[in-house]
Length: 469
Image (tube, rainbow, N blue to C red; front, side, top):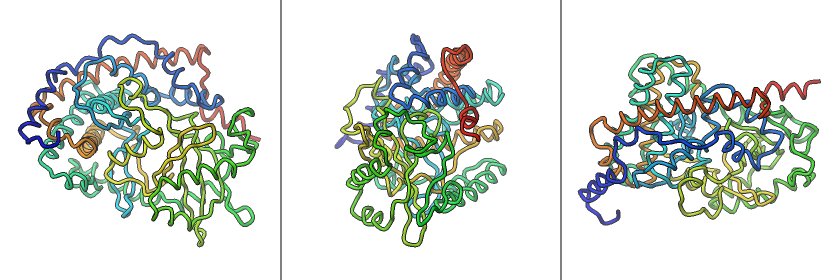
């Protein structure tokens, strides 16, 4: 609300309670949909031979299923009243889409790190995705319902408190705000939490392009070539390809025909200094990478380039499919889905990859481009106890508040809507519990379909066995 006073903006935030009372957020609504049908719709257009791998990964656990089924929660949220406080949101802010990575200045920060589903939507959609993921994870780890409730509360209360703080901040102060690992150590409540953060910093420092080169590439003649490691990494036109013979990308017959126009298109989306920087690298090889859980089967290329000293740069060009948020919350259609991801990431993140850009691939498929690995660090959920999970929830709540405050410019309105008491947090914790029940029902139906053969599900090990000699 440009030109409005702080008092008027606070009033607007409180008025949003008329659209959606804070206590109303406890309900999941009446859910009427077939989870298998919506999953089938989200699998359309993916590489057909990789869809069973997507389902195999999702079948591993309720949390894996939740990660791979963002479309279900977006559908369900779309049936509920919302706050009318609309802004750029992550769209898939589950607990494993946060992590550590290096800024261009080589400082390690913690932030949201996945923006495939970013779009304009109600701010609370991100919070509901976050608290539901923590509750699903807590139950999967065998924690009590009380511990799961406390973890969800931790995330929302931290979001509330940080948003109240950001409501008092200046615009540039918000833009420059970063959650460094040093600040995380200071905020950690336990010695074990501080030890975990320090160990994470050490691990992240070792995850560089140089360290990846030895793991996945080898010198062949005067060039570097990536090794085929199917199903995770393979050459589009090689003997281990999982592309169908009639696929338009495969029919190009040569990886240079695939990458050259994409790379040229991508360069036009970068500032002049970044284009100048990339001119100092020579493209060596191109391979296909299977990533994540929800993205399995979408197109993702890894480009290996080296500079004059033979030092590597790995870029990832990933398919940008329409956001599940936009499917169920109508907003202005983006000019380009890859640009949507890039713009959303730049608005929501404290610091973004210097090589972030977009392009259009063969067949008109939109892509976005970023570095593949740059001191990235993520949580291993299986190795945390209830106390550490609650601590991690607080950091994620902090990071989400920072992202929302920066991207929206509505910290004052959101803080006023939430208020100072625990009502909003209690409602979201109750929502998380109720929605985790729904996730478990959907997961049971999904696993039953996999076991009966109604859905073809294969693990990474199943696929790898196909390529063993």
